[in-house]
Image (tube, rainbow, N blue to C red; front, side):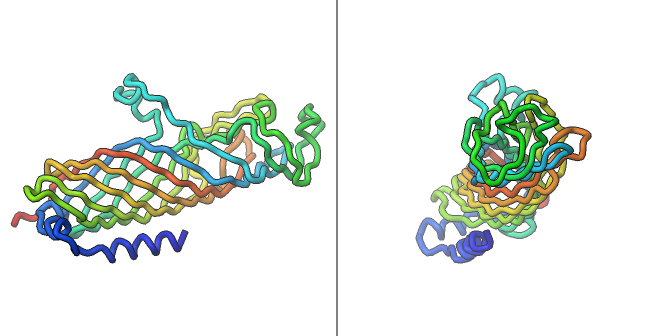
Length: 285
């Protein structure tokens, strides 16, 4: 992760207006965003590495090793994506920020991803599940890195109401190209972020479902690379890629009980957003 972030900053500061298109970009008034706010809204897809998850409760203390997970994208439905009361249901990204100098900004926002362990997969399990409390010999007793089938009959674990990454970020924008009429611009945006993870966890264990409340469960870091197509002076479309890592040390499992889970996740996210600049404090020249 440190290597990725270092390479990203090296790329940002190594870009220079070596070609005619880049020279035009730097001469374009749109290349200076100092004193402007910006806002973005978009939708994402997320991809996760295999994860080791430790579950601990009153009648169990076990670990699943190398568990595969996926996101839960919402199918296209105008009644959802274009409905002001429903458009936050899909996996979305929201950010607002401010350029405190020509091309450097600070921002804050919310990445609403979703995380779900893939049903019907072979996983390795170690630890104990009380066979006197749970009457299922296939999934109870003592385990020592044995392979079992993860199925809904055993459990279902997901952050489907939100694998939420609430983060602040330092952003650097570099003009790459602009049209000769200076009405269109292509720019690169690099970001480093840190924040808290606030999952809304749904946990079903031996048929008993617990839909927990949102809860700050840990922290995370990420780096982003984005390309922006800017037009009409203050609007832009953005394609963004984010590589992140998080440590979830306090995941709620069974509502008011003290049961908890812990896991570390590396994720890759891509999103497409629409945004705009708001020139409140722009200096007149």
